Image: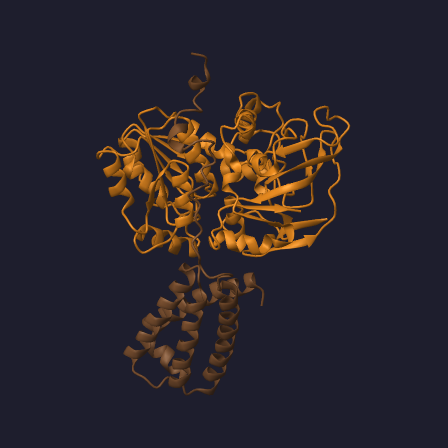
Length: 145
Length: 390
């Protein structure tokens, strides 16, 4: 998967997370029945909060890989709490997409080099110390006195 | 020829593309000897500026040798060494005659589109979206230069590429940003963003005689270079920009504030409005992040001047128009009228007043370009300015 495509998929996953999270908060009974979840409606709402937090993290952050790995962890929880075969198949597909995207983003977002400080304190661009250059470029400074 | 081409968000590739041809008698073909990655190229890389198409050649900071000249081009001859300003200008329209080159009325060949988006078209630009003409850019081995009998600046043999190259954009951009502030000897000038344009703005403010120049950034390397150029550094991750600026000005605020950041202000927990902007950007409810503009309006001394060389592309939210109006602030902005300043700045280089090569931290080949876009974007490896040699 090329970086721009992984990035686009990550955006899509972010929006998907938010939409799913809102649905879990607004209609927990519906989600619970559709996915065959073995938990209370309150727990479904908590899943919704988790989904929205992950979605926002994905959409707002430049470093997206940790958030997609967060989705993978969430997928594991969803698989553990779901009983319906059709839901498990859908979850397996989403998990595979999450893992592929997370691996690609982890590669892309890794710094090329470890951080080392570069000292540019000798790069003034001036022929003399900066304090001596103050006002040298003013038009009136160039007029004969 | 080889050229860096845009293929989508965060996807620049070094492709083999057809060589450019003379299309108009005023054209020239320039063999690029040096080109640079500009901070505003990162807006394209990050997908914030609309109007790019897959395969577009990017880059608008370049110089080289004239290889071919159109039949009506009396200014250039084969072998001339030139810097090509990023703004394409006709030299004949009313705006060009007034010196407002960046809003040339003729060179944007997609002006109907730009008229719809901005109300009026601006000049055509190299390698910077189809909103500004869709011209092929200069991160390439060869470039077709339209209206080449007007824009290109001839460079004497004694001035090396690393000194001359920036006459095409960031040096005059920093200079214009400072000049349009009308700097007075008693002024404090605060500059947000110590990237390449910010660095030249600092030097311009010093040369133009500001009493005190302050640079705001978060990258230690940029701040050390800013300090070398005569600025007092403020690292906004370690201290409050507003409190420090008030301290430095006895509570009055800086007289002149310059935004050399533009639409991609850093997002951080210390500035909640940046998170708000990022969320709205992600939901496509806002295109640009306006933190720097808000902070400048808040902290600027009443009756002061805000100068905005930083690139903005669309719409912002929560703009403090009340403070702007009540404090009587003047706003000066715009793309750079490069040809208004280039000859004077070239003379300053030749006379040794400034050596623009101080800003170059990375020299590499065109093939290294795609990786260096990422290095520059992420401010890794001490990267402040990348120059590529095709």
